[in-house]
Length: 172
Image (cartoon, rainbow, N blue to C red):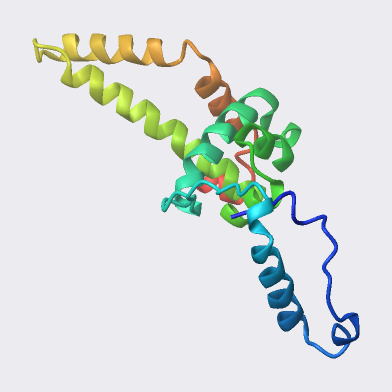
């Protein structure tokens, strides 16, 4: 509850007590005075907060998706953590909380790239009625071709090859 018009009113009363009372007591005294004057004020109730809070596990997919886009555009060396954070609409410090190093963030983006590729290939293989090897390969090729029309995943794979000498990236 906020009392916007009351917050700028001067509080009457013994000012000599203010120096002797602790902060909590002074705050309660002021609040009591403000509430006694509430009939003169407009009371604005704040909306109730949602019980669903954003956690690190809920933010990781958004950060990873941003990392795929940003690393695909600028490569490992040309992309900063701030670029990824800007794309995910969070602070760079929070990105570092989720992924302690730029290498781990790049590997997470690369893992997401591979997850999308495998899911696309599986969808292609599962979606064909004729299960002959040629039909399955053709369907998988079509779904992969549709997937890389965006080019982000393809560019990320090329950039990953260019930094494969970094141990953490090469192991992925």
